[in-house]
Image (cartoon, rainbow, N blue to C red):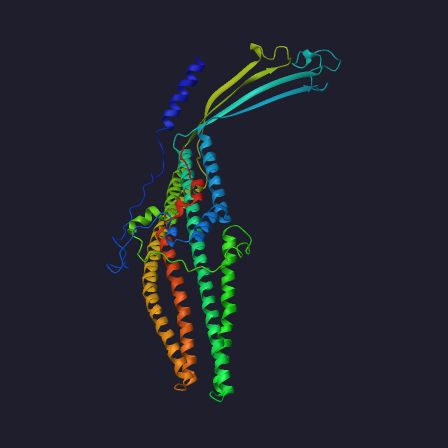
Length: 492
């Protein structure tokens, strides 16, 4: 009869707890997104669908290798993956109170009562007290107890905690995605800049060699009486000026190599030999990656993380609100207790108790209400952060489109400038050797050529890094990296 009563009580309490959750139910906010990118060119360059592994569009096997290796070995990725494991464990902690807790305890004691408290009279006669009937001899006590308690989640406080923990778990996955997206952009940008510095070093060394040849020619003409000492001084100054730029470019090149090494979780100089050979600056298709502004809500991990953090903050309001209501618990214990081992497992050694309990905070100085206000304020902060993240993402894309399209036009102009400056150098050199032009024209033409070539190499680098920035702003590619699969969360 008692067991039947307990089962009925469990069924009723479980049914009640399954149907009520205080606090607001989360709904994803509706966000007004623009219909198109305001800076996207209309017809000058056709849009192309961006690949999920967009870095492969640069057709550089070394870049592909660096990206894959970095996604597996980068330390920031490892930290983000550890945070996912932490969030998953926290979700388990939050869900644990939904189940009864059971503890077991066993003990053995041997005791002797004091003569002055055992119930014996002053003359040694028995008083009939409980301890007196054992003639004040040492006694043994064997105990084995199982205690159980279950707080019924009648108003949904625990389930709201699980809801908040689940949203935080999903936010940690998108935090990993944000780390991967940043890593992807950093690896691609540093690699492209590295190749750009190599290209500028080659240009500087090539121009230095040409200027040294001009210096030798000028010295020979000076010795032959066909040129002035001023021409020699100008040629020497040109050589030294060009030579002074090589150490700066080499420093920038080494910095990029060192940064790539750290991004791959290795020592800064680990990639020096691997990347020493000069290769062309990676260039991808000039088309603007396609997509709508609304795609950012799905592609950008920082936006999705902010949305999950908003969901978690909303659930925390319910957790705080549940403290206003009574808490119902079911407590029980069962065990064995005996003075002898011989009858420890007998029917007479059994003991048990079971019963419900209720606690209800009546007065706590306004602490619960204040906590609810805190959670409401935190939810409002999370909502504003979500909206700000979206606006920032839109700004990132618009700025990246402008930078890429403008740099593309600048690169075309610089390419034409290099051709014209090369022709000017050739003409100035011929006229000078024939005595038909001043040497200053040669110096100016060589200086302008070197500057135009350097600017063109920098522009090619900028165009490629701007394209990287555009892909990063669009949020593409991070879920195609190997580490993204390791961070996948599964809702139980």
